[in-house]
Image 1 (cartoon, rainbow, N blue to C red):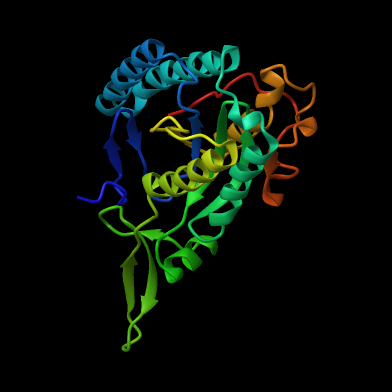
Image 2 (cartoon, rainbow, N blue to C red):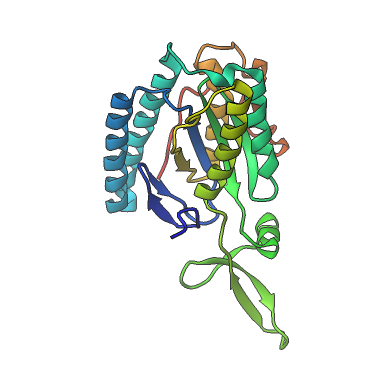
Length: 262
Protein backbone atom coordinates (compact mmCIF):
# COMPACT_ATOMS: atom_id res chain seq x y z
CA UNK A 1 0.00 0.00 0.00
CA UNK A 2 1.34 3.40 -1.01
CA UNK A 3 1.20 5.58 2.11
CA UNK A 4 2.09 8.70 0.10
CA UNK A 5 -0.99 8.69 -2.16
CA UNK A 6 -3.62 11.38 -1.72
CA UNK A 7 -6.20 10.67 0.99
CA UNK A 8 -8.72 13.18 2.31
CA UNK A 9 -8.02 12.00 5.86
CA UNK A 10 -5.31 9.72 7.25
CA UNK A 11 -3.14 9.21 10.28
CA UNK A 12 0.31 8.00 11.13
CA UNK A 13 1.45 9.03 14.59
CA UNK A 14 -0.46 12.30 14.13
CA UNK A 15 -3.90 12.73 12.53
CA UNK A 16 -4.06 14.60 9.20
CA UNK A 17 -6.97 16.08 7.25
CA UNK A 18 -6.45 17.14 3.62
CA UNK A 19 -9.59 18.53 1.97
CA UNK A 20 -9.07 18.76 -1.81
CA UNK A 21 -8.04 22.23 -2.94
CA UNK A 22 -7.22 23.49 0.57
CA UNK A 23 -4.24 25.60 1.64
CA UNK A 24 -2.14 24.30 4.53
CA UNK A 25 0.01 25.58 7.35
CA UNK A 26 2.71 22.96 8.03
CA UNK A 27 5.26 22.82 10.84
CA UNK A 28 8.06 20.28 10.97
CA UNK A 29 10.99 20.06 13.35
CA UNK A 30 14.40 18.53 13.90
CA UNK A 31 14.61 15.07 15.47
CA UNK A 32 15.20 15.40 19.21
CA UNK A 33 14.06 19.03 19.36
CA UNK A 34 11.40 18.15 21.95
CA UNK A 35 12.00 15.51 24.66
CA UNK A 36 10.28 12.23 23.79
CA UNK A 37 8.14 12.13 26.92
CA UNK A 38 6.86 15.67 26.25
CA UNK A 39 6.14 14.84 22.63
CA UNK A 40 4.26 11.65 23.57
CA UNK A 41 1.90 13.63 25.79
CA UNK A 42 1.42 16.35 23.17
CA UNK A 43 0.72 13.80 20.45
CA UNK A 44 -1.90 11.99 22.54
CA UNK A 45 -3.73 15.23 23.29
CA UNK A 46 -3.80 16.26 19.63
CA UNK A 47 -5.15 12.84 18.70
CA UNK A 48 -8.03 13.35 21.12
CA UNK A 49 -8.72 16.85 19.77
CA UNK A 50 -8.91 15.55 16.20
CA UNK A 51 -11.17 12.68 17.24
CA UNK A 52 -13.58 15.18 18.75
CA UNK A 53 -13.32 17.45 15.70
CA UNK A 54 -14.44 14.61 13.43
CA UNK A 55 -17.46 13.90 15.63
CA UNK A 56 -18.72 17.45 16.23
CA UNK A 57 -21.18 19.32 14.04
CA UNK A 58 -20.03 22.43 12.18
CA UNK A 59 -21.63 24.66 14.84
CA UNK A 60 -19.73 22.89 17.61
CA UNK A 61 -16.31 22.75 15.95
CA UNK A 62 -15.23 26.26 17.02
CA UNK A 63 -14.49 25.19 20.58
CA UNK A 64 -12.51 22.16 19.40
CA UNK A 65 -10.51 24.30 16.97
CA UNK A 66 -9.77 26.68 19.83
CA UNK A 67 -8.30 23.73 21.71
CA UNK A 68 -6.18 22.91 18.66
CA UNK A 69 -4.95 26.52 18.60
CA UNK A 70 -3.96 26.33 22.25
CA UNK A 71 -2.31 22.96 21.64
CA UNK A 72 -0.22 24.41 18.83
CA UNK A 73 0.73 27.41 20.93
CA UNK A 74 2.08 25.06 23.62
CA UNK A 75 3.83 22.89 21.02
CA UNK A 76 5.71 25.82 19.56
CA UNK A 77 6.56 27.27 22.95
CA UNK A 78 8.43 24.05 23.62
CA UNK A 79 10.36 24.53 20.38
CA UNK A 80 11.19 28.16 21.20
CA UNK A 81 12.27 27.38 24.75
CA UNK A 82 14.63 24.50 24.00
CA UNK A 83 18.22 25.29 25.02
CA UNK A 84 20.03 22.00 24.45
CA UNK A 85 19.45 21.60 20.73
CA UNK A 86 19.76 20.34 18.17
CA UNK A 87 19.85 23.62 16.24
CA UNK A 88 21.26 22.49 12.91
CA UNK A 89 19.10 25.01 11.04
CA UNK A 90 21.22 27.81 12.53
CA UNK A 91 23.88 26.74 10.06
CA UNK A 92 23.32 28.99 7.04
CA UNK A 93 24.15 26.14 4.68
CA UNK A 94 21.35 24.06 6.13
CA UNK A 95 18.83 26.92 6.29
CA UNK A 96 19.57 27.73 2.64
CA UNK A 97 19.13 24.05 1.77
CA UNK A 98 15.65 23.96 3.32
CA UNK A 99 14.64 27.27 1.71
CA UNK A 100 15.83 25.98 -1.65
CA UNK A 101 13.84 22.77 -1.23
CA UNK A 102 10.64 24.76 -0.67
CA UNK A 103 11.22 26.65 -3.91
CA UNK A 104 12.29 23.59 -5.89
CA UNK A 105 8.85 21.94 -5.95
CA UNK A 106 6.89 25.20 -6.00
CA UNK A 107 4.93 25.75 -9.20
CA UNK A 108 5.03 22.06 -10.01
CA UNK A 109 3.44 20.29 -7.05
CA UNK A 110 2.15 23.21 -5.01
CA UNK A 111 1.62 26.97 -4.78
CA UNK A 112 4.10 28.35 -2.27
CA UNK A 113 2.75 31.26 -0.19
CA UNK A 114 5.27 31.73 2.63
CA UNK A 115 7.85 30.00 4.77
CA UNK A 116 10.13 30.57 7.73
CA UNK A 117 13.18 28.50 8.66
CA UNK A 118 13.85 28.67 12.39
CA UNK A 119 16.83 27.22 14.32
CA UNK A 120 15.10 23.91 15.13
CA UNK A 121 11.93 23.87 13.01
CA UNK A 122 10.33 25.30 9.89
CA UNK A 123 6.91 26.63 8.89
CA UNK A 124 5.48 26.65 5.38
CA UNK A 125 2.15 27.71 3.84
CA UNK A 126 1.29 25.99 0.57
CA UNK A 127 -1.57 24.71 -1.58
CA UNK A 128 -1.08 21.31 -3.28
CA UNK A 129 -1.86 21.29 -7.00
CA UNK A 130 -3.81 18.70 -8.96
CA UNK A 131 -1.58 15.92 -10.32
CA UNK A 132 -2.29 16.61 -14.02
CA UNK A 133 -1.28 19.66 -16.06
CA UNK A 134 -4.88 20.23 -17.19
CA UNK A 135 -6.08 20.02 -13.61
CA UNK A 136 -3.36 22.38 -12.42
CA UNK A 137 -4.24 24.89 -15.16
CA UNK A 138 -7.90 24.78 -14.14
CA UNK A 139 -6.88 25.31 -10.52
CA UNK A 140 -4.63 28.29 -11.31
CA UNK A 141 -7.36 29.85 -13.48
CA UNK A 142 -10.03 29.37 -10.79
CA UNK A 143 -11.95 26.98 -13.06
CA UNK A 144 -12.39 24.12 -10.62
CA UNK A 145 -16.01 23.21 -9.91
CA UNK A 146 -17.79 20.60 -7.82
CA UNK A 147 -20.03 17.82 -9.11
CA UNK A 148 -23.17 16.65 -7.32
CA UNK A 149 -21.13 14.41 -5.02
CA UNK A 150 -18.87 17.31 -4.03
CA UNK A 151 -15.84 16.14 -6.03
CA UNK A 152 -13.57 18.84 -7.46
CA UNK A 153 -12.80 18.91 -11.16
CA UNK A 154 -13.14 20.95 -14.34
CA UNK A 155 -15.44 21.01 -17.35
CA UNK A 156 -14.48 20.13 -20.93
CA UNK A 157 -16.55 19.81 -24.10
CA UNK A 158 -16.75 16.43 -25.82
CA UNK A 159 -16.99 15.86 -29.58
CA UNK A 160 -20.72 16.67 -29.45
CA UNK A 161 -20.17 19.96 -27.68
CA UNK A 162 -21.54 18.63 -24.42
CA UNK A 163 -19.81 19.62 -21.20
CA UNK A 164 -18.16 16.80 -19.30
CA UNK A 165 -16.87 16.83 -15.73
CA UNK A 166 -13.26 15.70 -15.23
CA UNK A 167 -12.40 14.92 -11.60
CA UNK A 168 -8.96 15.88 -10.30
CA UNK A 169 -6.67 14.34 -7.69
CA UNK A 170 -4.29 16.53 -5.71
CA UNK A 171 -0.70 15.90 -4.71
CA UNK A 172 -0.77 14.60 -1.16
CA UNK A 173 0.81 16.45 1.74
CA UNK A 174 2.47 13.16 2.67
CA UNK A 175 4.28 12.93 -0.68
CA UNK A 176 5.22 16.63 -0.68
CA UNK A 177 6.70 16.52 2.79
CA UNK A 178 8.42 13.20 2.11
CA UNK A 179 10.22 14.76 -0.88
CA UNK A 180 11.24 17.91 1.02
CA UNK A 181 12.38 16.13 4.17
CA UNK A 182 14.15 13.24 2.46
CA UNK A 183 16.22 15.48 0.19
CA UNK A 184 17.14 17.99 2.90
CA UNK A 185 17.94 15.28 5.48
CA UNK A 186 20.35 13.48 3.17
CA UNK A 187 22.13 16.65 2.08
CA UNK A 188 22.17 18.22 5.57
CA UNK A 189 23.72 15.10 7.09
CA UNK A 190 26.35 15.16 4.37
CA UNK A 191 27.16 18.82 5.03
CA UNK A 192 27.28 18.27 8.79
CA UNK A 193 29.29 15.08 8.56
CA UNK A 194 26.76 13.13 10.57
CA UNK A 195 24.32 10.26 10.15
CA UNK A 196 20.98 9.26 11.65
CA UNK A 197 17.59 10.93 11.85
CA UNK A 198 17.60 14.60 10.89
CA UNK A 199 13.89 15.48 10.95
CA UNK A 200 11.21 14.28 13.33
CA UNK A 201 9.42 11.71 11.20
CA UNK A 202 6.04 13.46 11.09
CA UNK A 203 4.79 17.00 10.58
CA UNK A 204 1.91 19.03 11.99
CA UNK A 205 -0.54 20.46 9.46
CA UNK A 206 -3.69 22.57 9.61
CA UNK A 207 -5.81 23.70 6.66
CA UNK A 208 -6.97 27.31 6.56
CA UNK A 209 -10.75 27.68 6.62
CA UNK A 210 -11.05 31.02 4.82
CA UNK A 211 -9.14 33.92 3.28
CA UNK A 212 -8.92 35.77 6.59
CA UNK A 213 -7.31 32.82 8.32
CA UNK A 214 -4.92 32.37 5.38
CA UNK A 215 -3.74 35.98 5.84
CA UNK A 216 -3.37 35.57 9.60
CA UNK A 217 -1.43 32.35 9.10
CA UNK A 218 1.07 33.95 6.74
CA UNK A 219 1.45 36.83 9.20
CA UNK A 220 2.13 34.30 11.94
CA UNK A 221 4.77 32.51 9.87
CA UNK A 222 6.62 35.71 9.02
CA UNK A 223 6.53 36.94 12.60
CA UNK A 224 7.72 33.68 14.13
CA UNK A 225 11.32 34.94 14.62
CA UNK A 226 9.88 38.01 16.37
CA UNK A 227 7.75 35.87 18.66
CA UNK A 228 10.80 33.75 19.50
CA UNK A 229 12.80 36.87 20.40
CA UNK A 230 15.42 36.36 17.67
CA UNK A 231 14.77 39.65 15.81
CA UNK A 232 12.71 42.77 16.42
CA UNK A 233 11.17 43.01 12.94
CA UNK A 234 10.19 40.10 10.70
CA UNK A 235 11.98 41.70 7.74
CA UNK A 236 15.31 41.24 9.59
CA UNK A 237 15.11 37.46 9.45
CA UNK A 238 16.98 36.17 6.40
CA UNK A 239 15.03 32.90 6.23
CA UNK A 240 11.60 34.48 5.92
CA UNK A 241 9.92 34.44 2.52
CA UNK A 242 6.50 35.27 1.10
CA UNK A 243 5.12 35.25 -2.41
CA UNK A 244 4.46 38.41 -4.37
CA UNK A 245 0.72 37.64 -4.24
CA UNK A 246 0.71 38.16 -0.46
CA UNK A 247 2.43 41.56 -0.52
CA UNK A 248 -0.05 44.26 0.46
CA UNK A 249 -2.50 41.72 1.86
CA UNK A 250 -0.69 40.57 5.00
CA UNK A 251 -0.42 42.98 7.93
CA UNK A 252 3.10 43.72 9.16
CA UNK A 253 1.90 43.67 12.77
CA UNK A 254 3.12 40.72 14.85
CA UNK A 255 0.72 37.80 15.33
CA UNK A 256 1.17 35.99 18.62
CA UNK A 257 -0.43 32.78 17.39
CA UNK A 258 -2.99 31.31 14.98
CA UNK A 259 -6.65 32.09 15.47
CA UNK A 260 -8.45 29.17 13.88
CA UNK A 261 -12.05 29.28 12.70
CA UNK A 262 -14.38 26.41 11.75
